[in-house]
Structure formats: C-alpha cells, structure tokens
Length: 450
Image (spheres, rainbow, N blue to C red):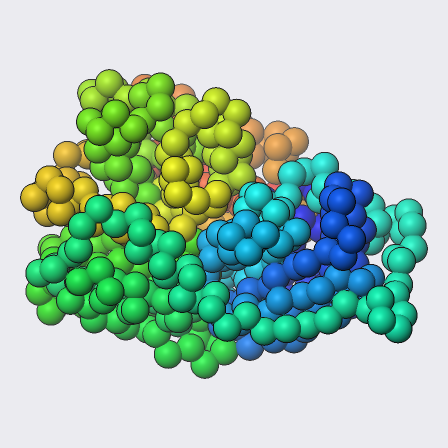
C-alpha cells in the first residue's frame, strides 16, 4: 500500500485528508505519468462523481489540475464507478477519474483513476504519481495561453452506460417484482431506468441524494433496511448497492441476505454449466466463507484465494485468464463484460440465471451453506495500524483462538486498506464460541494499537 493510494485509490476525510490542493496535484502528476506512456498530443480525461457534497469541489480541483498541464477534461456528472471504467474505453479517452469514497460515510471522499483500457492504475504508476507529489522529483509542466486544457460536460454518459448493461441481459424480466436500494448514491441516476427497461416491476428506495445521506442507513452497508422492506411488501427479491454502485448485496423473498459469496457461487455454477467458466475456476479473497469453499468442492469448481481487495482479485484473473472473481462484500468482477466490479451488472447476471433456470433467488442461494461468521471492526490509530503484524500480544491472542477452534473454524485479522480500522474475522460452527473469541482478540487489538 502506498503513501497516498490504498487498495482502492486515495481516500480520506474530504477537505482535510483529501484536500483541493491534493486533488489538483494528483491531477497534474497523473497527467505527467500518463504522458510518459502515451503518444497523444493532448491527453483527454473524463471525470465522474458520486453524490457527496464534496464531489463538485474535488472534481473541480482535479479537473483544474489536469487542465493546468494541458489536458482536456470531460465532466460526466453523477455516474457509477464502473461507468467511468467502461466509458473511458468506450470514448477512447486516456484516463478516467472517479471521485468517490464508495461505501464510506459522506464526510469521506476519494480519487480512483482508470487507464484508457478501463483498468485501475497499476502499483508502479501510483508510486510514480506519489513520488512526483510527495518527493517533488520534478515540477509540473504548467501551460499558458492556448495550451491550457478545456472542460466540457458529457451529455450521454448515463444513457450509454445503461445501454451497455442492458446489452448483457439474455432476456427481459417481465413479471419480476424487485425492490432496489440505491444508498442515495450513484445508482440513483441509473437503476430505476435500467431495470424498468429490462421489464422488471421495480420499487426504488433511498434514491433521493441530498449530498449528505449517501450510505446513511441505506444500501449494502445497511442491508437490514432492504431486508425489512422486501419482507413487508412481498417482493421476489431485492438489490442493494453502495454509494458508487460497484457492489451488490441481495435479499431473497424471505428477506434473507444473499451476499457476495453466494452470488459468486450461483454465477460460477451457472457459468460452468454454460461452458463459460475458464479452467473451472473462480477467484475470491481469504475473507470468503468456508461454506463457499465447500460448495465449490461439491460442484467441481476450483477456487483461487487472494488478499482482500478487488485489485488483487483482478490481478489474479488477468494473470491466469479467469472470468469471474470477487469479494464477500459484493464487489464482483465479470471479465466478459467489465474491467471492474459493477453492482448493476452483477444484478443483471443474477437475473439472467433466475430467468433461464426458472428458479427463485431463494432456491439458488439455499444451495450454499454459510458458516457462522463474526466480523468486528476495531478503530485504531494510524501508527497503531502499522504495528498490527509485529505486535506479540496480538499474535498470542490469535494463536490461542486458532488452537481452540482447530479444524472447525479459522481466524483472520487484517488492517483495512481504506480506513483506520483493524478487521477481526472469525468463522466456525459454534456462533457463541466465535463471538467470544472475536471479542477477546478485538480487546487486545484495541489496547495495543490505540
């Protein structure tokens, strides 16, 4: 993890940790690095945002940074993160930028950068950008007069993105009653139109963003809201997105959660049956549930595990040519159609399976037995977070829990890539046991890393 960029771009509290000055510098440094790898006379960059109040401020600042070194900028307005990844390639632009902090509260914001091929910047390019900004290894080539870049507005971004997702549907979804939670974020601009065009009977909630309510008691980070809504109103299923709509969690007709692990399991099995699962392999992270691994084994599907973070999943997929991968959090990558996780694309792929098999989401999801899992997020200091792997007391607490669980469970303790948190995850057959052990480890982490 770099000095500015974490596992998913640069992220922090807007106007302090992610300031206008930093955004401008990132724009300039990104252009300088891209110029080393492109033959374009004048770089073209497109910028999208989610619905946070700070989005206009930061998108204007980074656009100014790009223009100051001679780049032309296309402002897309509010769009999902995967729309930026798709459109940068579709429009033949040199780079795409998304201003978003994804599932985080409104006071956070972030900067994600995509290359012309729709993939996020590799580590070496991010490190080069960091060096230009933090080490001041070279001055920015500021332009004057007619060489300064221009800013224009994109009029068709939402329409073009919806058309792209619509084209991945194998049939229309007439007769399906779907509840959709947009988290007052980017999906508020796209979801209702997309799923209605595909024939579904939709009811959309939490789709009135006011700049402050993104992810607040809504969306995939508060799935209980959609669970209750589906149960009370008799929907066939529900979809919940996060603030920038690159994640998907689902709810079946009983209001039961269908998380990323189950979605990957359902889609992987269907892809295998269709002959579309390359090497019969799916890629997941170490956070995936033991029940998923058991399901894969029972269905003859190979599983490769990576570190937590969609970038590591994607790296493995590209390295070995796999077609599906993702995370329990609902960040799922379908490389046949996209270069990054896309919540609405994932929803359409799931609906394709429901329609073609004639089975309900509940029936499909009930095939996967999920082991009890406890996840505790422990807030720590920035310096404490760096000491996690070297602290002896934490290591002793983890080893004691692993010994007690034996082969009936596992322990995973890791630092968050985007927040000042340590995540303590335990999994096993006995809910009370893993809750007790998770609390013991969490207390040690809190005491040692405060």
